[in-house]
Length: 228
Image 1 (cartoon, rainbow, N blue to C red):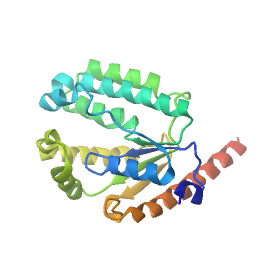
Image 2: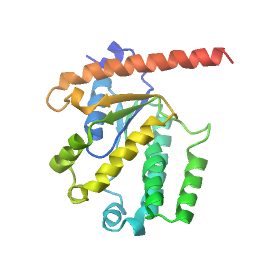
Image 3: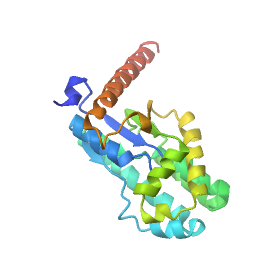
Image 4: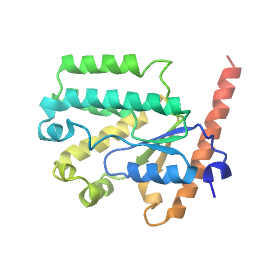
């Protein structure tokens, strides 16, 4: 059965999966796309010319990496809405500035000039009324210990070799970011409350939550419009 029809999820919806490394964004993206008969949009990691260099030298390559991600995500977002929606997106464009660029600036691995250039570019591209924001950000969260265990089990070699202090800081920064995020509605899912890889049926309760969240958000939007 197509769960999109069962739970009356719009066929042009755009749902974005967010969360730190190790929470299972790619697995969730695939599972929701299958359940809803949506297309997928994955982060381009294997073709990224800066990623390995970045992990070897944060200070040298942080600005290059962030600009590359911004350009790729902006192009992908534009493509998604040109298709007419119906997408599950792996990772959001908002995390780039709200977490990664900010972290490198504060830690001194991105210069003030580079950071100001990057944030100015981000604001001009993304923080405008014309940028097509997703209908919902689905934030996958878990304890720091659970996430580190997943990185050690399933992570890429460059992630497994990264000092654990880096992942702890990332976990804390993600929690701070999502607690202050307001560009679009957010549904939070704890990674210990489902197991898509072992039980495919565990996706249906998640779809039901998404449906309730989307319909509630739409009601609020109509109420706000009518009160203007």
